[in-house]
Image 1 (cartoon, helix red, strand yellow):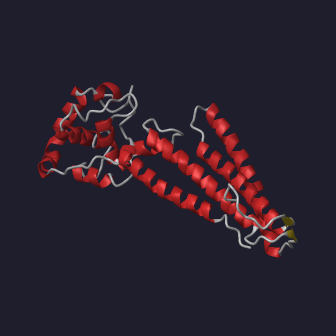
Image 2 (cartoon, rainbow, N blue to C red):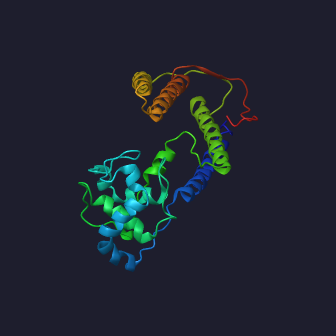
Image 3 (cartoon, rainbow, N blue to C red):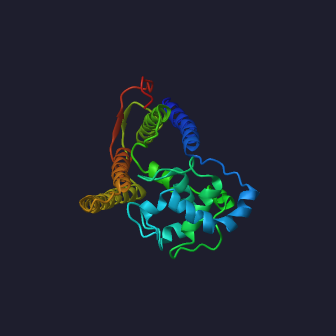
Length: 285
């Protein structure tokens, strides 16, 4: 007799996939950058005005007070000879508009021409030099990349701007995936056919190889997990951010390998017994 309880796990996994797509749409809506309107008049004046207007805005807006008159730094980061901003000029525009840390955003205080002027002044002064002036077209092209602020936000355990729908969907997706994977795992380890009596199993060379491989991988990930913990404890001591994501990955892989080894043992090395021919039940596994 065939098992009749292998359908619901697949329903749970498909439902989780659909909700995952909805969740991605919600997050993309939250993190999508505002579209940049490229004004030809602004582009035409940037090359002419940034040397004078940029310097004036850098002084009058208070930039020099934090970053130094020569970009030498102070309360704010050093701008002189800063390779990071030269390699990613759009980042300068983003920080000026939105701010970062203790630096306020100037998107509402400065005109568009002034923002590009002061950005180009920083990108062409004190040893900094970019080939082409920063323009709205450059910013529009750079928006196809993930903003560093978004990456930092996604790296946290709980983003500051996460809302109830995201929390609900993420939790429900995890429940559905767990439900479905356990169900499919049970169907695989216990087999498809149900007949009363003792079911003798004989391991195959392939099953033996799989058992050795999974246990070996579990040992490898255990060593990597301990190594990562030692590295992260040292990072904490140096007031650096530990790589918690790798800790979680190694821990998850250890559990996954042990679960797979248990399943291999149950399916290929352990005798089973079916008492009745009824595969129905309240749980779908």
